[in-house]
Length: 274
Image (cartoon, rainbow, N blue to C red; front, top):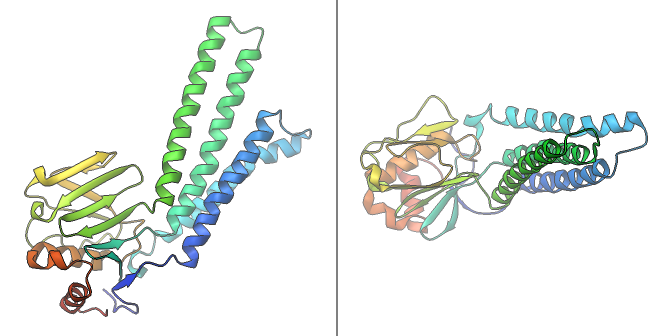
């Protein structure tokens, strides 16, 4: 693990890249709403502009996803830092690339929802379609549109809530994903774990007491072997692993999580700057 150039624990302040990611999501929402209104009202007069209206969200989404993919290639360049949320809570926050991912999802999801709406309206207006069949297909397409809309709202709300993120508390690890939540008590983890893994994008925890693992929503992995995604956490993966192992092996330090004295002892034990 490289020597840190920034404090290993620091107060939370949204960075310029985080604000840019938030603006990207808002811009994607506004663009997608405007596009949906144009398409549902009959589209543009020119077929060329109509084609551009169809292709633009796809191209923008691909561009955003390419940026997200590039950001995942450098897990070892992530900061050696935990954010101090307050006494009793340290946080590994989300990377700004989550915003670009959600912006791409906004583009794709709203395009699909709009298309479902156009298809259902066309089915209802088609005089040649058998009446029960046309109504049935219209209902199915509206249900699919509603499902996509729920997923889109869930992703956007999760992003502005700061997810995914990992919080360290005196009781254990709180991991909140875009659509799920897990709480893993310190006592549930095997002593001497977790260990550093070659991959910087995931971490599998070794659990000896699975009954102390709580899950809500869509939380991937088994209770006996929780699988945590680190791809979108703004923290050096080996530093995070070392911090978790420190609190697993030193229960007396857990009550000092998020305090100045506790942070100083943590940094000194791991050999990083505070």
